[in-house]
Length: 214
Image (tube, rainbow, N blue to C red; front, side):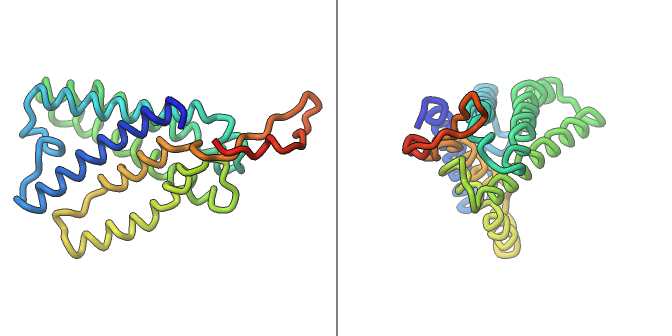
């Protein structure tokens, strides 16, 4: 893994552990922790959680940006997902890092809060939808390695989440879909075939060096 993968994967793991801890506490006590309940969080806890989520989203955006050549080696659907993913992650980062803390600090309610929540929801849907498309678009030809394979598991995860909603309503949450998405985006490009390098004539040179694993 390259440095941007290590950073993004480490942060995605931290977010996943937080989600697991919150789920375990909810299952055993019936109450959520400060990780998913703003009312329980101290200023320090809220700041730490904000920093973690902000860093995780931005690191995933940087992975997508750094792996532009691998996206370019994919089909039309793969290429089409790159900028929606980056834009969605940037919007979510702004919401997590600036808008949400401001709303908490000022106690804002009403229209502004509703607009903020709607924008965050749309941005997350763009990220999730693009991740699903990317996962499915790389089932046959996969220029993005392990990360794309993780993203291809998102649709089965949706089914599991829906089923959990009937079996254990309190535990059913889209947070684990976000966790899978985070891991998938963080690992894009890991153990992927090296992108083909075009010659000055516009043709792809032949040779054994075009399919080397990371």
